[in-house]
Image (cartoon, rainbow, N blue to C red; front, side):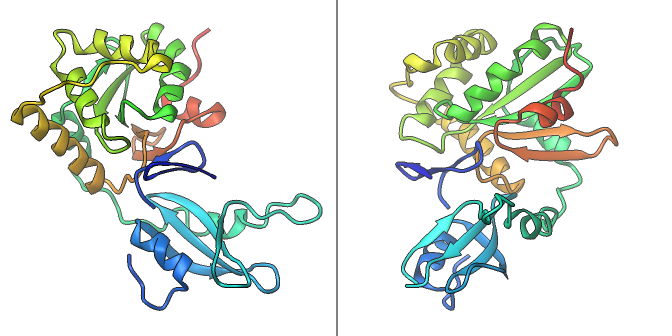
Length: 256
């Protein structure tokens, strides 16, 4: 597990901080104070204690070490490489509150940056931080769909990962052509992307704050937060850099 500032990267997701429960052992309590929600205890090797938890809507397994002073976050495998964490995490995968009825309308009314044609048959919203490497990975993966005119991504910039994130998000929204600025930012991501705005005016600070509040209302605690309508026209949220089958589920059949 890699940590950078207050960011923990789990399963292709940038989380700006991992509710308080006085009865949890100290390492577990520390995680809950950072936003991890412990759902239930699960089986663990002798001497260890396992917990099924959630980082936002992403299930995670926690394993408290025998000394009670450390916690391991990740997947537990047996001697045959069988994933012992999978079943208990699947059991809590849908254990989350329903989305607000007006979710899609809230997304439409947010301050987003278009990426792809307005007449694309599919619209996908992406809550993104300019400094998020997994947002960048999703951007690159989505290029065939966007360039083929199959999808319009609507990037909702937030500033949650690094101190420069809000100022970069402001620079994107304030650009003469935000769509072109966003593409240029992603195309130059490895060299730092767009320069942070030096003095962010109050109206832009409000827009970025509102986007962050929307992210929170939807229960999204990491970026990218991808919101789309599935095959049953149900609003669905996926957190992380969608790949393979999930990428097709989000964006549709890959263009030839």
